[in-house]
Amino acid sequence: MPDGGVPAPAAEGPGAGRYAAAVDDALDRLVDVGFEFGPDFAMHAPMAAETLVTLDHPDEVPSWIERNLRRRRSYAPPPPMEPIPAGDLAGRRAALGDYRRVTDWVEYFDRRLAEEPWRDVVARWWPVLLDGAFAAFTHGLIRTAHAVRILRTAPKPSGLQLNELARGLAYWAARFTPVRGPGGTGEIPVTLAARVPADRVPAALSELTVVNAGLYAEYAPRPPVPAVHTVTAPAAVRLVLPILPEELWAPSYAAAEALAAQVWAVSRGFSGKGAPLPDGDPPAADALVEQAVEIGEEHAIKLAEACRREYALRPDPRYLAAAHTLNVNCRHEGGL
Image (cartoon, rainbow, N blue to C red):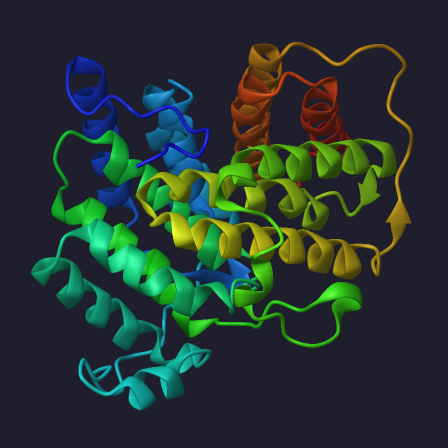
């Protein structure tokens, strides 16, 4: 299967073992944490903790989690209502977009992942959920993508890792929100993606992320966080491409493109353009990562990692400028 422009993670050896141990420790600390800290405000701790481990900062994860949970008091998820039916397609679709069923969805995906290979579960549900990828302002997709990276990197899936994938898929299903077409009107069926052939999707994703990174740096929006997802959501799609059948690559790109446009449409409805950045070139990618880790804000960490990853595939200073923009804004606003 083509790699989608994503280097294959190490599946064995001490590096992968340390990664898996650090991720499991983080997930264990977060096992009782809810999905949201406000209506539709996603808890980022699982995603950011995995990103810190990916950035080779595993020793900082426990203290980062403690600080984050003090700042973001999560809401308890709704109690179970009734099982999501395994053999009833209409019943499953009726539960999409119903956040009251999020715990039911976790239990459903836990069962599926106990019975089937995790890659098969993702491949089966990806096209179903893709039409609702604006879920929780793209965070259902992004959390799922981070869980996929965990399972691609760890030598052997653990129960905690599989449960994190179940939670990502469940949150996406429970907050299912249709992706809109151009101009923010109308739902966009992902089957309309044929204009970008599968073999062009990796390059098209690079073009999409670099253009949006450049726009983010140029616009420096206030508040700075929402528009970040014009980069991180398409970059998250790339993380999942290697495990998807090629016939899902073009629809995935179409959804990523539409998501970025939809995020911009919402973001520009806020307060507007921020202060200009200082003159001069942004720091190098590794320095931006270190700055984001020091700042500690979850979006800064995730954007710096996504920009560094995309920059490695297509070296373009717009990625560095985007990460620098958010770092500067985070410092200015006291870590958000």
